[in-house]
Length: 71
Image (cartoon, rainbow, N blue to C red; front, side, top):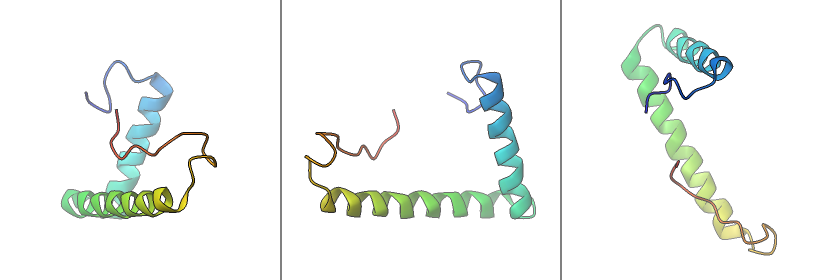
């Protein structure tokens, strides 16, 4: 599924397009640099989620456990 598919509400699609343009502008339209930065951000956030999962008790989250993959 594309980020711009027909299933994405119009406002959300516009927001995503704006964010894509902002990321590319930040990297002077270098798509490889933008992808590298986003992948590093994802890796960092997964590490933070793993640390949080280890420190949280199930009672604190009422049985919720983090999911590392988007569904």
